[in-house]
Image (cartoon, rainbow, N blue to C red; front, side, top):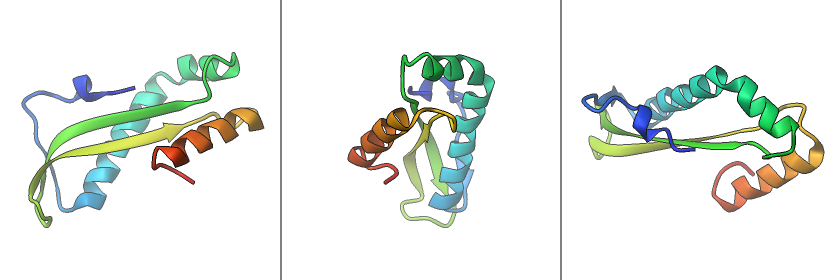
Length: 102
């Protein structure tokens, strides 16, 4: 899922460095998941998907970074803790191939 349309158009994310920007946008993604947790839980529990890959891009100024301006992208991978082992394995394999968790 891409959340770019939820980022306010006339806003600029200002953070000291890449770590802080990543943490801020990861929290943005996690709050979206929390707001829709019941829907996502149902989809995973019913076997319609293994989990979520959520992405958001925001224009960002890093006050201590180089380059100071960029479009910062943060992805979050989520699955149910109680999902079956096969589902978790598929999602982790997908994430590893896509450059996420190992």
